[in-house]
Structures are given as structure tokens and as C-alpha cells.
Length: 411
Image 1 (cartoon, one colour):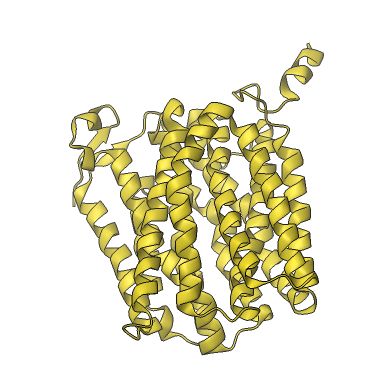
Image 2 (image 1 turned 30 degrees about the horizontal axis):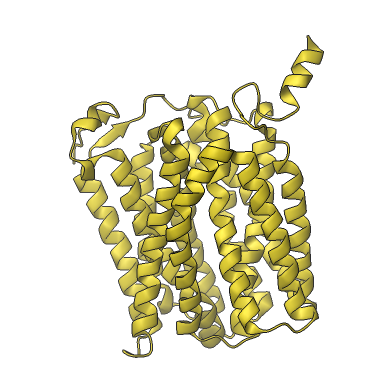
């Protein structure tokens, strides 16, 4: 099928629902329908159907993160197709893989289908981040990214709300839920393919590997963010099932609370980042995460109860919503043509630790779960130190607080 190609300026005459920003919002809503449902059922599915322990869950998440580590392959793919096309195709792969997850209730089967869905998820996220920074103007980026986060949370809220209401009432099976959620993602992706023209970004993107010295702080922050996120994603929800015996509808209710909070607070966080800047926003996030991870450890070392654990899970998730401040920091310091290749490089850097941390910490979890969260708190401290190196007003040539003093010394 031949698609119309429009520049962003030409797209302004289209009805709002056919403009680039609405396409971003629609794809943002499609992704969580599959991924969030998969995540909500994951721990109960693998424990109940495949007998997973902390060791197997560590291996599963290590395998899941390998495509993220290989996200640099996006650079090769955008030589062959538009980023918009790749985003839609990745959504189809994510949805289709999620739909058939319950057909493979064994350790090897779950690893294979997880790998496929992860390719779709990570390649979509890589390209989506690039398109957001290309299609949204810098002045509007913090607020718009806040609204995009809220829309994604709303889609997750819908999926989780339906699970809470229907899982026990209708005696749903893992297979039926995965089929419906994955199928909806595929359907929306197909609609995006046929309903939208191809949008031409104002700045042609470099289709080569880009690794610039002046982006070093952004790379370091991405590495630490990926390492910390793994502990939350892998072990926080696993703790709720393993230690406190949460069932599917209870885990889902916890996720639902998370996304209600994100829907409310993400747009406000966008305004806060626009007003106070990325340095203050990320500093606030990392200080909060240090406290949350230490409290997680206290649950195991001091026997604190399930109410605190659930509250920490919600607070933890809310802090991670501030991660879009890292995107706007890069948008401010980057050459426009670097956005697509650097998005791929940054995703790979973000997932370096993700390839080995889950499996290593899975073994540590068996010995001392509290120590896993203590390790996470230490990594949040490193992230805090890095965030304090961001200037109040970052821009090209002023990427870190050291950039201008060093330039003056060089003169």
C-alpha cells in the first residue's frame, strides 16, 4: 500500500486525530494493553504454571532484556524502513507474542515467547522515544511527555481494572486474557498503519552509529537507570507474590493503583520539569528511590508488613514516572540529527546491566532478598551524584556543570 508522505508542518491541517501527536498517543495506549497485562499475570503464571523460583525469574528477565541490549540494531533497520513503520511493526510483534504466551507453560517455552515479545517491546520503545523527541517541540516536550505518560497509564489502568473486575467473577484463564490483550494491541497497530500518512521529521536522522563524548553524562544516567529499574521490575512484584501470597487480582489491583496515581500526577510532573528543570526533578526522584529501596530492605530485615510493602510499590512506581526528565535533558543537549541513532545507543546502554543483573541478583535473592534492595539503594545514590552534574539550563555546549569551566580553561 502506498502512503502519503507529509512534513510536520503539512500535517497541521489534518484533523487532530490524524496528526503526529495523536499517533504517538494512540501507539502509547496500544503498547500497555499487551505489556501491562503480560506483566500483571507474569508472576502468578510462572509460579503457578511453571514452578518458577527466584532463580528462574532472574533468568526470565535476563532473557527479556537481551533485545533491549541489542536495541542498537534499530540503526540498521531504519536504513531499510521509516521509524514510524518500524514502530508499528514492533507493536504487532509485541501483541502477537503476548497473545500466545499461555500456549508455552514451560521454562524453555516461556523464555522463547518472552524473547519475541521483548524484541517488539524494546524496538517499539526505542523508536517511540526517538519519534517523540523529533515530533514534539522542545518548549512543549515536558508537558507533552507528561500527558503521553498519563495516556499510557490510562491504558494500563483499563487493562488492570478489567482484570480486577473479571478475573475471579468470570473465572478467566491465562490463555483468554493473553489472547484478548495481545489481540487488541495488534488491532490498534494495524489501524495505525492504514489510518495515518507517513510523517517526515524536519531533521533527517543519521543512520550510523553515534557515540559522542559530550553525551557522556546522559549515557551514564541511562546505564544507572537501567540497572535500578531491573530490581524494581523483577523483584518488587515478585516479592508481593512470593512473600505475601498475592493472587492475580490482588497484584493487578496494586498495578491499578499505580496507574491511577500516574494518570493524575504525570501531567503535573511534566509541568514541574518545565518549571524547575531536569536537575531538580531527577534529584527528587533519586532521593525518593533511595528511601524506598532502603524501606524495601527493611521489610525483610525487620519483618515489616504487607501494607507498607504495597505502599512502597506505589510510591516506587510514581518516582519512576519522572524518568521522562532524562529524555528532555537529552533533547536539549543533542544535535537534532543525532536523536534516532542515540535513542538506539541509549537503549543498549540502558540494558547493559539488565542482561546480567537479574540472573545474578536472582541467586542473591535466594540467600538474602533484603540485600538485593540494599544494592538498589546504593545504585540510586550513584544516580543522585550523576544528576547533580546536570546544569540548571542544559544545552549544546553546556551538557554538564563542568562543561563551561573546562572550556574556559582550555581557552
